Image (tube, rainbow, N blue to C red; front, side, top):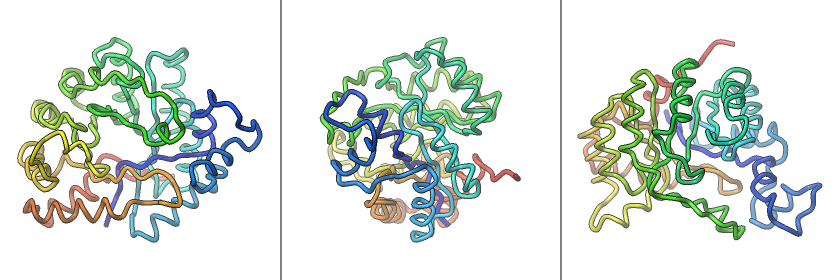
Length: 301
């Protein structure tokens, strides 16, 4: 059984929000035009994209997946996918705690929309993780029994590059040690650092070692390894298993758009790395499925 803790729901609304500053795009049918420009399948309605995702998971024998609303303001799209397929999808949403109306949007997403993960991108939105407004995020997560996902390290957004959109991110703000300082004050909140810290691997391990509520997700090809001469993916898994343990690793692919679909190659590479790292069958089950189900149990309708 496989559960994927990191997929992006690149909806029509996402493409519309992303390209608001771009000229020469039609107001009607903008998402379809952008998808054509990118060589992607038109996402269609949230219902249609949810059906596409469900069929894709079925083809690859993936039981459940986190779907991330990947721009502030697109959480309704993911909420609809979760409403239609509550046994397959868990909803996360990108959140900027500095934006106007942030408190109201946070409460609505966690209550009315039933989102179960709050995604923070400090480098993108230029805030410190120890900002008092971030403290409100953790308090809300504790109140609603949600997780907090904090992107650390290197941040590159492929679709922005393809469209020629600027990405003036401040990488200094994405330090896992800052995440640990806040996570320690909220021990009941699961805190997820994706991509093994995305280049801040040592700091991510230190944070996880200090805070038992910090989880590392394994998603993407982990190209950040290039910053560590001689490091291999199996060595990353071996060290993460030694420090955080199998019970705090969450398998993910970082899959996003179609027709590429679910990234089976990422799964294959990580499965091979786990074998080389000497992971037991019990470890594999925890990483690829059981930890996900423990954090995000199915709820009755």
